[in-house]
Image (cartoon, rainbow, N blue to C red; front, side, top):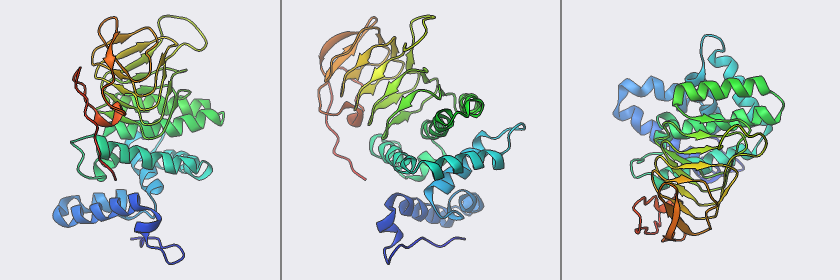
Length: 279
């Protein structure tokens, strides 16, 4: 088993607190549930970095008879090696899940079991492939992510950091969609087009937006920063920043109710309390 990394006398907890916490949780779980020990060593404790663990785990999830896990792991490793900023982004994503999801008690949960987190991190590598001109591999990853996790994100979509998909089943994000930093969305959200139009045809979601379960945002429209889209709404017109919209079709029904709706995760119309959680 690899030993924790130390850099210039600094402990792993100082150099990479997220990875340090994941390792400590895995060690605790392996002691308390011996039947999972070999799995936890293979997925977590045998790796020297978060990126290595994530690459292994996603490759195991997304492999099939046509493209095996070892080949996919090479793709993930290439993405992480050539794009260091992905390392910061995946850490922001897992912290976002831990902070915002009341069902998340451990950092291990998103990494090992939450398909929303896994789907986003798979998308990030598919997007990297797309930007490198590896279009066929990008489409292959998109297809496998859709089949395995029930989340369909076009590899050309642009998604910021600190994004959380809670439950995530049936989330669809179109080719020209843009999702800003610190966005939260629940299951069955669609960021889609309105028909067969070509070109820039999908929504632009601002920073800190909360998209409720089943929300449909359609067309090349903007949802302003820190807005809140109520569950089940169908949005076809631009949404001003710091407002709440609801209904079919969606209409502005008031202010967002708090500075950062994506953090509070409150879907109840007329109620939004700020959450002060931290790492």
